[in-house]
Structures are given as C-alpha cells and as structure tokens.
Length: 292
Ligand code: NDP
Image (cartoon, rainbow, N blue to C red; front, side):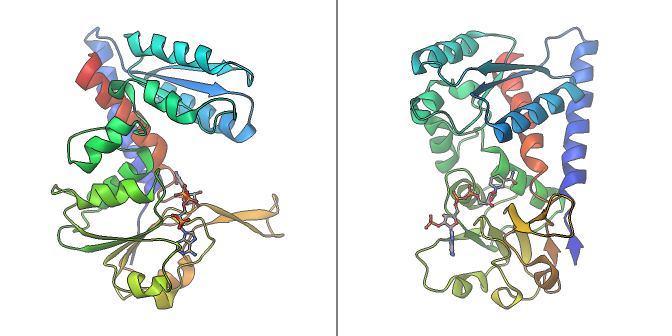
C-alpha cells in the first residue's frame, strides 16, 4: 500500500513553477500574476486568500489582494472584475466565495473573463471541460488527476466511482476522468445521496473518489482489495487530546480502508495541498496561453 503524498507533489509543482518564473525574469519578461478579490471579513476566507497570496509570492508570481467591504454593491464588484479582465499584469482572477447575500455569485463568476478563470467555475470553462476542450479545470479536481498521473496510476478503462456530485468537486472530477485523454479515459460512475446503498457502487471501484463531507463514511467493507482511494473530505471531529479540541479527518476510514488499498491519500496531506498548487499552475497556464 502506497500513501499518496500530496504535500510532496504540491511542493514539486510549486518548485517547477518557481524555476519557470525565474527563467522568465532572467529573460526580462513579464511574469504571471494572480489577483484575489475578497468581499467582507469572513475569517476562513481571509485565511484561504492569505495562503494563496503567500504561495504566489514564494514562487515569484505577481500577486495582489483586493479586500472589499461587505457592503460593496454588486455593480462596483463587477466593475472591478472588468478592470482586471483588461489588466495585462494579472492573468488569473480569483473571487473568494462565498459572497454576501446581496451579490449574485453566478453573475460575478460569469463576469470573469474565461481567459482568466483560473478557478474553472465559469460556465464556459465547465462547458469546455464537458466537451473535452482544453480549459481551466477547477483546482481540486485538477489536483486529483495530477496525483493519479504523478503516481503513474493506470486510469484507462478503470472504473472510477465518485461519491458526491457538487459543482466544485464531484461533477468536474467525473468529467475529467471521462475524457479520452492521458490520465483519464476511465469508466465513470457518480453516486450521491439518492443511492439506496452506496456500497453497491463503491465495491465496484478500481479508483474511489470520496467527496462527501461526512467523516470516515467509507468503511473497509465498502471497497474491494487493491482499490485506489482518493479522499477529498475535510471534516472536523471532536478530539479532546488535541490542543484545539478537534482533529481533521477525511470521508474515508483511513486506518481500516488503507489495509485493503493499493494507493490512498491521507487527510490531511493528500488532496488538500494540491488545490493551491493547481491554482498556481492554472495561473501560469493563463499567462502562457493569453498573457505572455
Ligand atoms: P457538497 O456538500 O457540496 O457535496 C457533497 C456531496 O456528497 C453531494 O453530492 C451529496 O449528495 C453527497 N452526499 C452527502 N451525503 C451522502 C451520503 N450519505 N451518501 C451518498 N452521497 C452523499 O461538498 P463538496 O463537494 O464541496 O465537498 C466535499 C468534501 O470535500 C467536504 O468535506 C469538503 O470540505 C471537501 N473539500 C476539500 C477540498 C480540498 O481538499 N481542497 C476542496 C473542496 C471540498 P446530494 O447531491 O444528493 O446532496
């Protein structure tokens, strides 16, 4: 059984991007840039945006955070996004979600130029993914495929069972794995809460992707021997032995499922670190395609 080290893969990706950006600087070229727009002062969102900014700085990427007050109007926010759509120094635009209730999230996402949609949430990016065109895939699913590829896990003809059908994980990873392409070309099943017995499906998985948001829901008797397990879940469970009073676990009962698995991602340290790495990677791609 091999534990997939997402921390290491993410560090490798960052280091590869850092080298490419150093090369651009040495050649006197413009560098890729990412602007993060955050509305209001939700502490979790502030932490996410700060860590994205820090990750950009570490690899020499241009970065800026636009902190807007919670009562900014939707029109002002859209105008700001439009100005960044025209800005040649920022190749990726990220709007941290969720947004305050008076702002229409869909309208905001649709205002971001698809050429700068490094989060991959724009309907054009989603549509391109579905029809198999090169596009920006959203970062967590893109990170899952990257892990599979870097660990040279065969995906062609394999049965991938995805538990969860959210727009940010379940649906996009299912569409990625369905593509007739390297690192994909899989037979894909998507399972969700309407299934009577999800184990009927999970037991058939060669590659099981759990994106449920339910602590340790996937048990050892729900998978077959040799399964590859990708655990996307991030769940807090009460743990008085920890200073914070809780610990983070995935959607998979790691201790027992790992005994049957051929490969498995831990939580934390599996899929989690890949999300920011893929955001950086998508921003570099936007620069190469449209901004160099
Ligand atoms: P959502 O809550 O949006 O979606 C959860 C999905 O799981 C839904 O499709 C739901 O079904 C399905 N589901 C829930 N309960 C069951 C059940 N008992 N049986 C079968 N299916 C079920 O979550 P997300 O996709 O946004 O996130 C999933 C997990 O991944 C969370 O723990 C989240 O924190 C984590 N996450 C981690 C990221 C990272 O590592 N960077 C990034 C994003 C998410 P239905 O549609 O029918 O309601």
